[in-house]
Amino acid sequence: MQLRNKYYTHPVLMEGTDFYENSLFETNVDAERVGYDICFKMSATLQNKLLVDYLRSGDVVIVYHIECPQTCYRNAISTNELELSYTLRDKDINGKVEICSFLIANKNIPSYCNDDFSADYRGFRFDIEQGCIMGVGNQVNFIVNKIKDDLSSTSSIFSIIPNYDENISVMQVDLMGEKIVISLPVKAFNVYKNMSSMLDIQSTMHSIVIIPALQYVFNELKSVKDQLYEYEDKRWFINLSKACAKMNVALNEDNMENINPLEMAQLLIDAPITDGLINIAISEDIDEN
Image 1 (cartoon, rainbow, N blue to C red):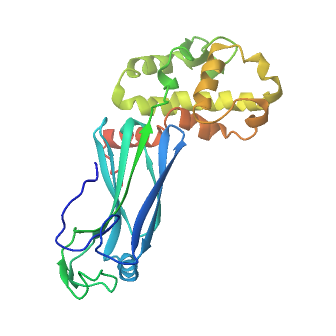
Image 2 (image 1 turned 45 degrees about the vertical axis):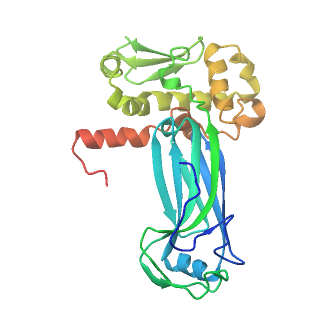
Image 3 (image 1 turned 180 degrees about the vertical axis):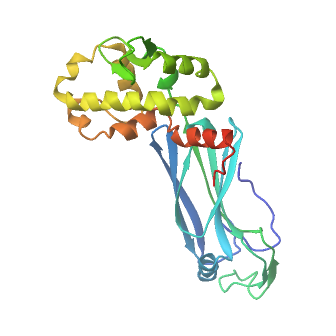
């Protein structure tokens, strides 16, 4: 969504206009990665006593319109706070992200008059309808390039095989080869093999198999943090290091103590637990709320 010059039937607080005196509405947006996702931190500056009062009372809200043309993602976030954080999933955005901000009437405001109207409008009253724009902030554009290398579907790092030892009924993980080898009891392996290609339950399968395996991997790396050279030349370690580096996490002796294995495992697989639980709820016709 690109901001363009428009004509309004009432005074609008925005840069480059003379509707108001000694008044200001500006917004700023910063972005940072949280795993694969993007957290936008929005802040607003509003200098106009009446509009500040309206914002506090809920008569007016700040609305951030977020749009990604490449993915067709669009959403409007409203708040009466001057600071707001909002996280977008990696799957929702790619390329250019446009964020525009507005002051919007949250209810009808009859006979609106402001002491800070400029001389041309001072003393006039306007009937403001709910949804009308009362202020226009800044437009901020970001370029978001996907960094996701979905480890759960990359054959270069995982090998899932059956374990034919009938005395072993649990999943096992072996890190000594070029791939992370996940051994499942035969019955479990057959179920996994038959269901792993079903896209609608991928998140459930990842939560059951991949996340515990990755958690084991990170726990093992933490336990031998001063001997990481044993793994550094293995293909799975090289690929895992690259994926972590894209999230500003280094797999080295100095940083291993700071890594939370369970959290990191979930971030690398794009936090599938919520989606997995929702899939189960849908299949069992359970209310998600």
